[in-house]
Length: 324
Image (cartoon, rainbow, N blue to C red; front, side, top):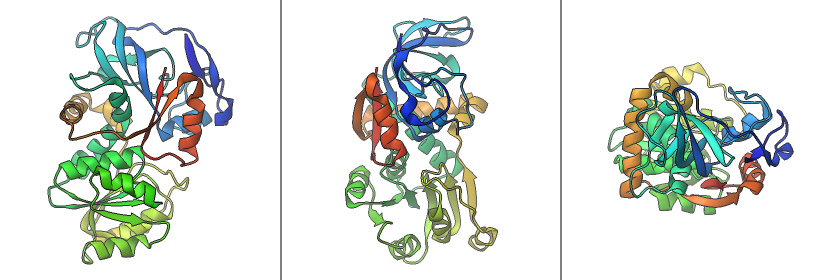
């Protein structure tokens, strides 16, 4: 089968269109014809060998897919061949056929297309888990989203807005902030020109944000902690800035705040029943239109590397997808 092949850990430029053996499902697994695959920052890290998961080469990157079930292995009952599904597979998605665990595969409701599903699984799943589970978000609270024009950021804006929260979006340009406004952000902060802490304090009458969604890291994390309200919750999701931050512990004491990690991959593995409930709620939001992924780029399989490069260089806003 055709796939976008990584021959071994290294620079993104080494990946190229090629062929891999077509996978077959084992017990508790299924295979699906990939109609769309999402592009995420961790895909760029897997190719370079910088992620927690290190596949055996050669392999195809791509951790979230949507398509039709082709075959099911022993013990798989909740989906059948021909059924429309979305699946989280860690890697292997930039290919014509992918293998998935049945426990991490979910049927698509009527009205949710393959592109929207592939553009939503990781970003909305991560944001939903972070805001509703880890942060216990309540209506009326204030949510600050860093890197707000990225896939996770826009998903977090929409989920927080739908939950009745007031959203402050921080991004690096007026164009990116306009995407945030369209997704439901009420306050726009250009942190390439404004001091993040001062802008948040000004927007909250000095109180600070109740919840911070941080996919950026670097120096912005400490600034965001300083801008939290009493009993604030800071969600650590990623480090798009490239630097893993070190937050002074005295700030956590003085703010009475919590810093929580949001590792959605591990949540799926450790708590499959809870994950299934959250996924059903998220899919319902996609079906009724209250959640709507912002797809800004569609790439054929042969150009998947361009999508990875754009994300790695932080040139992309919204969500990119690959169409095998």
